Length: 230
Image (cartoon, rainbow, N blue to C red; front, side, top):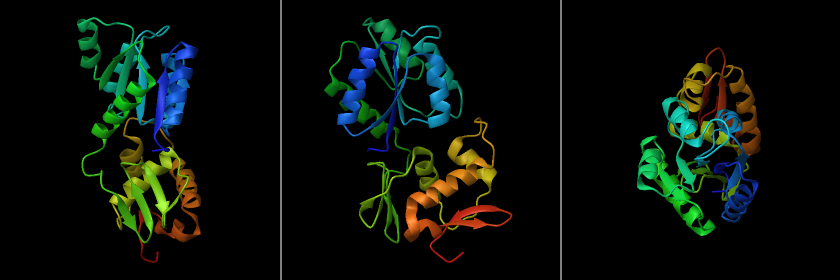
């Protein structure tokens, strides 16, 4: 769970702080943004697992940002919970029609927020990826969002986690850098192919001496995940 990243988008520092404390106590990693521009930059760079998005933001509104995110293929699957002081049913319907996964009216309790957040994350788990995957003591648990080596937690960054999850659910097959970009980053995100190499190095470092060799370089082609010798 500690590797799950939640983006808090709200222009009120006190609200962001209250949410941040609740998320930290619940074991989540969090990021903060005070407007839509800052939020979009963080979403592209960090690919959070869920967005807590205030309806009323300076400049581009939260509802407009939600529409944009749901239109873009690379961000369409990121769950969004709208936060708003608007209590009218029409506003709630409008928020949900933009593609938001839930809608919480202010004021709300931190416990309610965390409970609703957990429910949305459970629903958002990709089909077929809910079960843990394990190879020779290396275990990835999607429900806990945790990677362990013989029971010991490994510090794996968000991008490296997604890369490892793809590898472990597609073992023994070679993927080019371009294919990995499409599968892990999404086709509409502009990332240099060589960026893959940086994340591969980070992933190997996170896996340590015991498991790094499973992420294999296939010269002239790309990478594969395998328990066999390269």
